[in-house]
Length: 221
Figure (cartoon, rainbow, N blue to C red):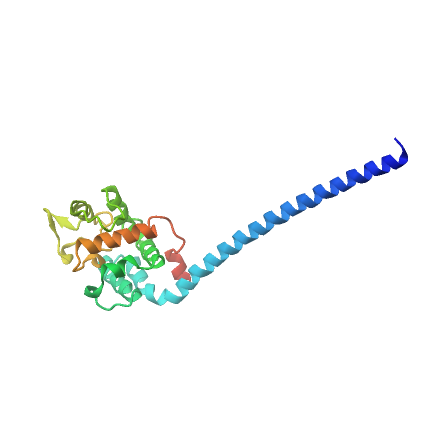
């Protein structure tokens, strides 16, 4: 091999090495950018959650205090008041199934998390949803199965001797049946239809999944 051929060979090897180096560098840069993009998305989600808390802390503060004091009945009534305020209504009787099916998921998840946190996972909309699903309930709003709703009512402590109980006869102690509360919100002139619509909304919002909007966040605002 001549000196010229040797030089050309070394030059080709160097060029190939440079190409590999550039390729590896590009891959590393792409991974870094992807990681940064994911981090930015996470930060945006956190900021969005904090914005919700900051704007609504006045709305949930009283409910948090009542739940922390285990004043379940008062907290239940306050929950209904908060929910009415969220959808811009002042009278429970004016709420329609269409209002319910559009209820903001973020608010439902936060309300559920407050109840779960202060009742040690004993109460909450997610508990009610889980019981409904375990009895065969679905998110099909066209299917109003009264037998399923009655089974759910029995398990939640809303029925006794095959009859629905008046609100004041419910158990508001910490030993009430699993998922018994919130209960006031469920009472509607639309009856079973309203219940099915709201349960469908809970399932659409997936309130049973763990969310980051926890009670401690509100306390720290």
